[in-house]
Length: 215
Ligand code: SAH
View 1 (cartoon, rainbow, N blue to C red):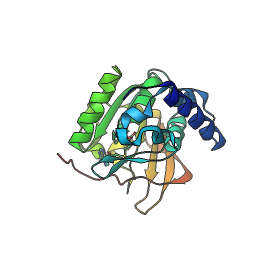
View 2: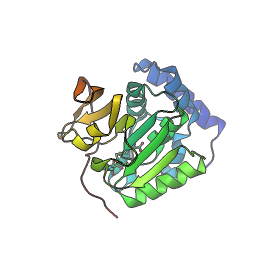
View 3: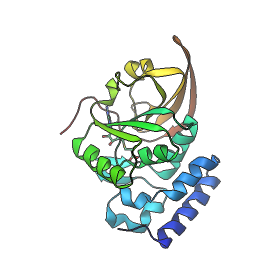
């Protein structure tokens, strides 16, 4: 499937919708306008890719809706060159959004087929600043830490201690927290080695963050 003028038009409309929903980070909006989201999900969804909806990506998982991607990305306040850890590669779409903001992305997925598929599409778009890992995100990537930003794209039943350790001083973590049907979006800023600021933001809905890997 190709990117067409029609898809580009649908993306413009989506960006307008995100504005009305309160997203006002122009950099994030321009990236959403640029990336062909329909190429990250099953082709049968075609034009629907530009509805503000999540979609199934296999293995019982979903690509987050565009509002949520934009919202979490804006909360991270990405600067060019930031080292970013993403937990839950899924379709790879969120990784592409971060890559377009010129950050260095390390993304972990616990389902091997999803990780492989995402790696393939991200290579197709020549995102040399995205590094995909098949593994358990609860462990993070200690060899590559500290990270300036950490984004968790699955609902965490607890704030993973190991990931807090891997956050740089002044680093930001954005995490949907809770084990019910809906969660709270939390932004954590590491003020000092042992000092973290925690802001509880809006209600959100994610698939659960689970331990271990699945092949
Ligand atoms: N960022 C993704 C959203 C995918 S949904 C996108 O843009 O498409 C969340 C993903 O998190 C799922 O693919 C799920 O398998 C994955 N996940 C859940 N727990 C995980 C863990 N402990 N480590 C790594 N990935 C995990």
